[in-house]
Amino acid sequence: MCLGIPGKILDCFAANGLRMATVQFGGITRQACLQYVPDAQIGDYVVVHVGFAISKLDEEEASRTYRLLEEIGQLLELETPAVDDPPDGEEK
Image 1 (spheres, helix red, strand yellow):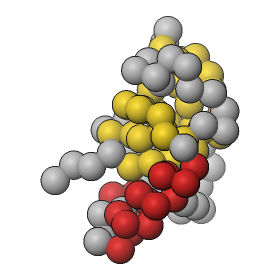
Image 2 (cartoon, rainbow, N blue to C red):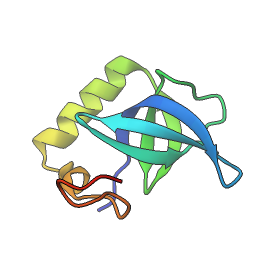
Image 3 (cartoon, rainbow, N blue to C red):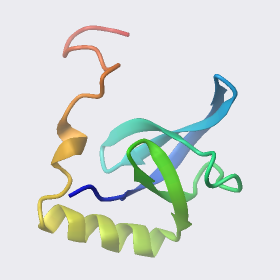
Image 4 (cartoon, one colour):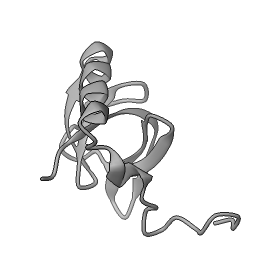
């Protein structure tokens, strides 16, 4: 099953004409497209599904949802390196 994961926007930038962000999920960061949530800003919490932020939520709801997902073991995909992540010990 695919789930949206809550994360905090750390940085916003443009890439290939798309509004993008660096999003933190616990101790892991990934890039996500912000096109579906155009009002999202640095510091906001968003639900990310397959690389797209699909909605905003407040910090309390993000924390509660993240804890529940962690309890049921649905955060394992975050531990898998992203396609563009270098192997351990190598720089980008």
